[in-house]
Image 1 (cartoon, rainbow, N blue to C red):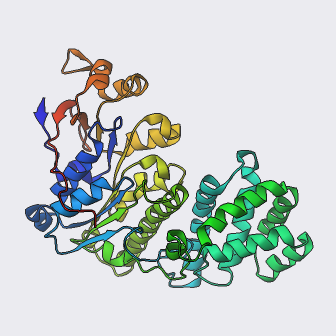
Image 2 (cartoon, rainbow, N blue to C red; image 1 turned 180 degrees about the horizontal axis):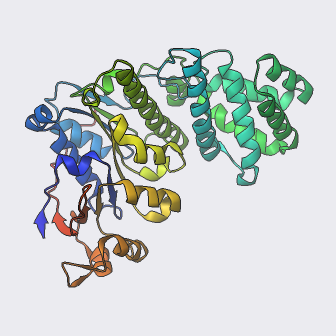
Image 3 (spheres, rainbow, N blue to C red; image 1 turned 60 degrees about the vertical axis):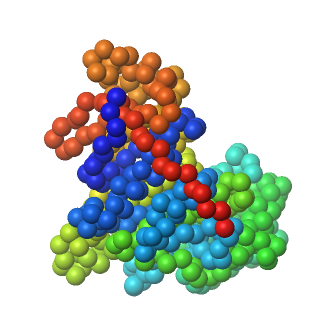
Length: 408
């Protein structure tokens, strides 16, 4: 067993962390951020770092570790007032063709998020997908910054108005005929109680006016400094504490934050290419996502894994067990992540990972047995490069110091 000795190169092409609760995953993420933010390493390998912390403790520890860091941004909707409109088109499209592409990509992902988070009856998912799709295309025909309040009023009309009137509204807004027809058909065949249930879930995002969700989601323009977050040397922490925030709010904000970062690095890469600059001008963005299963539905995740390197985006993702994510996403992670770190895990995951690590570690120890018995802050690591695959090793990760300052 050796101490952790990961390099920048081990993190730069995606890193995957798996392990049971309280086995040491979050501690590893903090260690990696400390590694990337080391002043000497920043001068040799400048980058920006974004952490999405679903528990809250990591954010406090990291804020203390980096309390002297000049460009540290910490956002917690329970304590700080900021607006983030998940439906806003961002980054701002520069022309009509770019706007059409951004709307298409954003609607596709938002439909997945809304159905997953707000749907009350899984049997109605196909209908709700078309209703959300039609509603979003309708709203984007008027402006680039529709809000959940606009969505709530429109869907209230959908349940109230005759379908002929709704179809006429959609056609006047130049919504594509196929989308219009499929949306009206879905409204006509959807059970009223299912529609009402979804409407009530959206209502919780827009009322009462002083709630966290309304304060955050119902402003048209986001005040989060997304462009600054991507600047070299900036470290951004989103503290989304499970104890203090509604679960559906946390899921929507997490998914859409990841989506916005992806769209931003794509646009940055296009701008660099249009200016005729070398790819070296595209500096690295490290996006850390704890509780990764929250964003498992995003189809963009697989594109981020396979194409992120050419946009200057590196993912560091962590969660508890492989059953939390679909099989296709598992395969994409394991084939694209240069480094895989596994803390203590259950027998089922240990069997799957034995195929990745090898049946025996060090030539004699049974991999499955090791993985289910690893002590806290100890992990099995597999690193690879374009030319070789390093043998798995067992590493000890030293614990970061606890936060001693108050939460405020």
